[in-house]
Length: 125
Image (cartoon, rainbow, N blue to C red; front, top):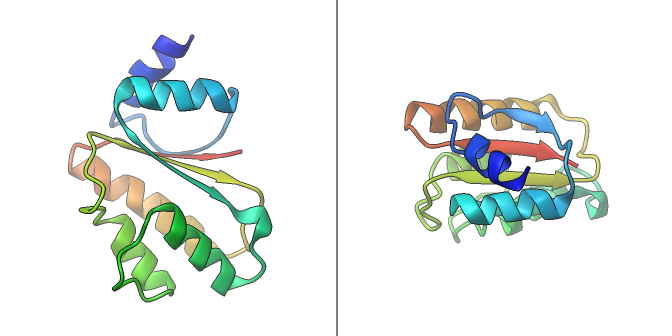
């Protein structure tokens, strides 16, 4: 199963935003096997937009220029030059602040990286 998951992660056209339907250990192992970068964020501890953005910035190890707003998040997620990898997995724990903008950014990020030929997966646990 884990080998199949790591192979699935390589599929740039299959990448998207999904609810996690395997164990965290299976996902982490598959990410490692695919040699992808895993960004993991716990939004259960964040209250309000500012804390959500701070946790997201911490998870992706955003550079100093990160402006802690939705536009800066979109820019950073579409850059990731500080963390080069053949693919990315973004794992979110907990419930995010109900904001359509975050959902839009996640989907746009998947689409952007797809155009670059780089798989970018988002899993919500």
